Length: 432
Ligand SMILES: [Zn+2]
Image (cartoon, rainbow, N blue to C red; front, side, top):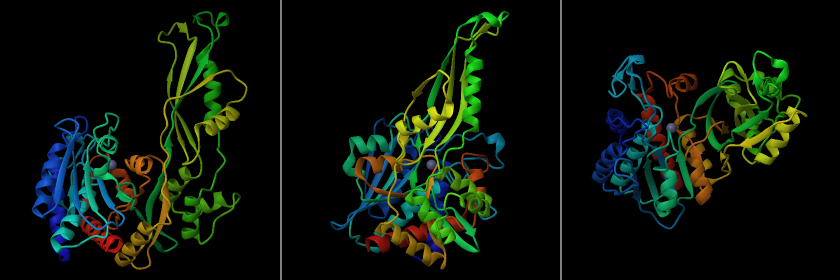
């Protein structure tokens, strides 16, 4: 297909997807599944809908191949909410303005869903025969994710629908210039969301006579200060080493790390810092419910993110060392994510070649996401090599980061075309 046809087809599909309100909750992702099904069946693809409840369907399409390794192009069709009062356009208009397509989901991630669909449809119409199955999945319920309608449910109830050796999902593709050279970030690993509660006990009493009580809130304050001042020891993982050796040509020692980070452009430094250590951010405090009662118990909830491979037991030792001798209880709330895929795979090499065709001289570097995506289900259940990657060149990484989940979300049409062409090239290379 010629460049402009690919561009027009992906743009039009994206605009139609944006016009379907799939704000989660409640989701209503079946609207998107139906649209995509009609589009993909017209290209001759086999489609199957999987739905735990009728309104929240997941769609899987397949271009059958030989018995080689399978590639899954994954995307979620739900979005976060949008407040029309904050927007310059109707968030569900899909309006084209200043060379960009505007609307909720334009970046996260109906653009990549549209590009995935146009890539597989184009290959199907061409009669492309992949060496292993090429699979397209548009899944529900990523943004809330706790109600188990989307990929978690598919992996458990219909594993054969989405089982694949390789996957390309959301989470990366940002482009930056480092030392004069363009660099694309590819998310190969994710930190583990591992929040905990510190429970501090004292003795209640009337607030007018503080001397007779033992104020749990005041005790907790001492712990909070220590947590806030804590600087965890940086740790270089293989992913971070690969990042530094591509960006700087060498891996800095612990002493040089700070100065090397300062030499990076601020956006990239902000991205790298969470890759070096666990982070702890106290975010919620609960103590007395009455102004005149000194609390006997104070709960401090902390957002905490562990490096891939780091355990809660190991993190707990670090936290306890930081907090010292004061008495408290530490309760882990959960541990989600924290998975990784090797950057030394045929998928990585094909991705590098496809980017090299788009922009000669550009490098691809692995990064560890501070948050997590649906990729963790695939890595955990099937051992899939899953990368977060959708290249963006016209829109800067800073602007894209500011617009995701925010007002006036939009994507340049040039980037929709770039992403679609890139995916088509990637599939031809990997499964050709
Ligand atoms: Zn997303």
